[in-house]
Length: 192
Image (tube, rainbow, N blue to C red; front, side, top):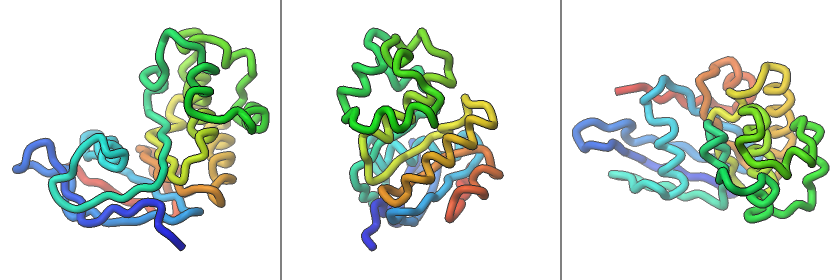
């Protein structure tokens, strides 16, 4: 089966004398979830920027199929002047919208609102909705459930896992229990 993500001998640091990681290698196939766990400053979000091509590695390579991302801060992932529906329609098809609304505990009317009119949890669920509707090969999840209460967090993760036949997922989390529960492999990034 084809790898949807290949990270090979990846090294990166904002200065050459202090690397965030060195010779990092892993891959992801359709149907797999891998979790990246580490303390703040260990390079977890930077790794996503490298995967998305927003940063250039010092050494090694990253090859990723079509990806979408759920950011840790949902307020920064939506433009404040446009309704959520406009921003979802810009990047995704609405064909399966109704299918996901109940699981994400979202109402259609909520999507007609501006981002600041929603709570952090509602906005995070809308961000997850948008990412899934984009039909990615690879879903990058940066603390996707940190703004949600435990019950909703579990429902959202179960819903995401139902889509593993369509994609692979890379999850950044501080929650070691969540990582152990849902991931095929946990990759620990240590702060150097």
